[in-house]
Length: 338
Image: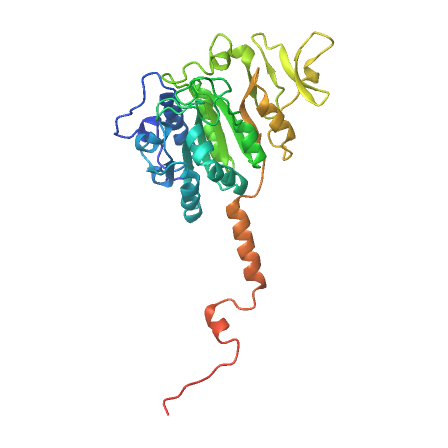
């Protein structure tokens, strides 16, 4: 934070607009977590921009007191890319849902990850179309009955982590929609990362897909169903912290510490910084338990850095360094008044 950056609280980032989401929606939790993260990133309000597409989540720019744009369906990454490349010092955030980003916006989504433009994407994943009233989305599980699949969804779902890491994402994290403290911490981590940061939030839609993540996020089961990944620490979980993840036969399995000779030293230690994405991919695929927190945080040159390096290299080798020297480089003629 620079010396002239104001000291903010979360209240400074709340706009004067009435927040209009369904009562009980996790979107309220995500909004408050973002409001609490923003004072920690060291940016003035006028140096922050939120860009959204279409969907319930995409009302977000109205509710934060920063610059923002409620854009068009699926195109928020493209618009945000232009904002960031034109204004490299801005903190740029994309707010999107599973339908907005993975259906009509699928190409924009994978290519912003591939390019590694330095911005942050918060993907509200509720595995349903909420704004348009309950059709199946690209992440809806097989068999779910929805408005557009009355006999059960027959289309295999996208897996957000797999798609992201397959697109060479340099940062991928996952958080439950009912854990604002963890969300705030992950949002701050995402902003610190140089490159495209993707955070998948398991967001409950109380109207059209209520309870979709209860077997993972409910307080009665979360100790046994969530593994929190922290760089440099063993992947241990459980109500008694006596379970962990081990690699066996090329697969990740659950082991109980103290049984079958398993000790804490046998438990996998999380390496979020590893440039090789294989382990991150495997961790992202686990469902029971599901891995939460920052799964991948690898260093890779951003699109802006690569482009700047290329420009500088071309300039260094260039024969001419200004327009005038280029114009005078060949045969020249002097026209007199006579």
